[in-house]
Image 1 (cartoon, one colour):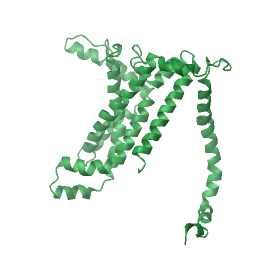
Image 2 (tube, rainbow, N blue to C red; image 1 turned 90 degrees about the horizontal axis):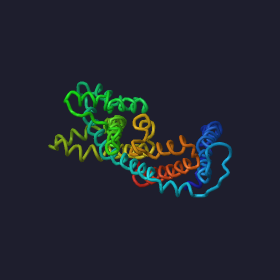
Image 3 (cartoon, helix red, strand yellow; image 1 turned 90 degrees about the vertical axis):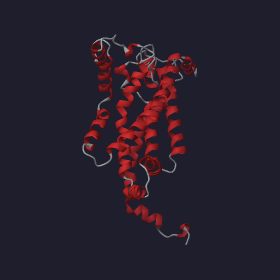
Length: 300
């Protein structure tokens, strides 16, 4: 009997309580999604076509000039490069570090739980608090770097005031702040792997590296792809930690797209220009998110 002639299958599905749940919960969810996601997105796209300060109604229509000014802006190009650099460091350094530490603390060894807690604590810390803490650490007059330089009787570095070094200081904080999140993802993935695979490989004489390469990595691949996805999207949305740490300076050397939007679109009351930044950021995020999921995560 074909599916088309299967009696009552779809009816039984609806009678099991699906229809009342949809009627009860779907309209409020759609209403909230429309009010707080769809409408703001549409408004941002509309405002990006105007030279608007945020007061009154937008009246000075300028078409795509905001986008033209945006891509001619050197600070925005620097922000794009910084987002790409953050993404690269997150994938090439942060994730391998998290994976290595996860393999170390996922075993039943003395102190493993304490080490997990220690490594995960930076992620629990609020981004703004982390930025303020590391701003004090990097301070060349009163911070930890100043104390270390004074101990060795050398000149104290002003890392956050040097536009050639500030971005690397920010990258160090990002790795410190977020690798614990990825470590916990990997620990959860490692604990789901059947230990009999490792026992069989060990009996066959496989080395630790061979077990890692031939068992751990293939079985952990879905978790790694998910971790990379979080890193890519998080790298594009970085804001809360940058503002208290550097404010995008010095000389826009640590701007990201979101801090650029805030600095040039909100604080300078150029809402139309800021909306153009938001539209570009939205397009990049959606393209990367759906493209990545379609290419790398379609079977997960």
